[in-house]
Length: 286
Length: 286
Image (cartoon, rainbow over the protein chains, first blue to last red):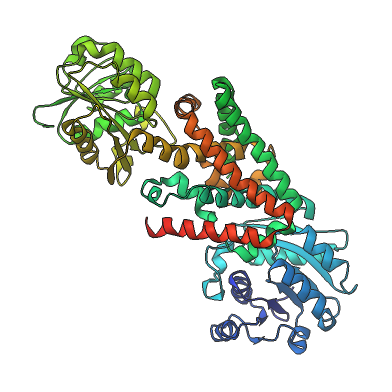
């Protein structure tokens, strides 16, 4: 990657795509963009986030200018865009994505992609509660995790391309996981927690309870405000793992219920001691 | 209550009792204290949090000096202390507690208490992750909820005593709930959330996951660091309600699992829309 000579194309200029555009512009790259929404393209051009853009997501001329492509679309749209437009890619380029699930999307693209170009999966673990290019801000990447998910179809040069992107965008920790390891980690740490927050919010319809909510309830349910289109895609793309994480969690909660109905105080205390010890580990490692 | 003339006794000078002592001293009351721990009593005297104290929790002379009593002990210890020492109370005084559960403790004391004195339940909804008088700080009460739980055995004068304590300590919102309403609210907003956090922490033993935890997982599990003695008491004192809250939550989570296994994307999105709308209500009311 050479900021003096390389043009990077960002497909989908939402919160994440727009933040990539700003971060890569600041690094000196020529950045171009595609987005169906004309207000988004106009805003990206006016603010200098991109130097050229089009509202035609399959604009052949613009796609052919790219020395590297970052696809900021939702998982299924990402797969469709790459397969539909691969004829226009410059020979030998690297592509990456921003999807929060990896097994499903990578295999679908990599098995059908031109052999002279390469998709390297990456997942920038950053976001905001708001969406759209108007809320984009590359400082959300600072200190966050950036995960590259190589497969047997990737080369070391391709993997380095993705890792360098993460470094240039200011991520705090850049690591490699297999797509399966990534999806297991995200199924537990992110998807299960969102499923829990949604269920906690939906389990009780007491508007007057608002008056009594403390910090812990607010903390647990903050992520119950959820973009239903994106998150239903993410859940379904990882559903085997998510279902098994839900089952594992439900079993743990069921054990607390069992201790309560059995009157087993010592068993309950033992669970509290275990969770306390495990959670402490997170504090000392943060 | 008259700060010029009244002596208030605090039984149990831990985090909450110590914070009460400081806050009530600042209001001008003479404050005295009982605690089994000699270091605690010495510290409370040295720092001026109390003007007199004893390590004998049944010290007759000290108890008889009190114009009002606040019991800062754990729920079961609170019940035992009040019943064991009621012979020493001055005639006509008001007593209150700080317990996080109400039905069990109030009934046990109120049904056996001398008829000339009165226990009014109250729950200061504030705390810290650390314990002991050394961490006490009355500023934890600022803006927090203070709930008074009157029963048919209470007089308006007694209820006003408890409410005035909350006001003088700087709580943000002082409200009245019946013991049953209190226990339902706390079963959902506090106990269920703690049961969830503990279960989430216990469901997966992957130490290497620490590297990838984002803010949402940390937020959900912060309360998994839990004092096992206090919380097992709280859970068991409210177990009928807590079990039904666990069941209600488990049903809601089970519905997400069902949507996933059925491939019902529209059903899943509907749950996300509901949780988003409900959580927004919390933001606008905070």
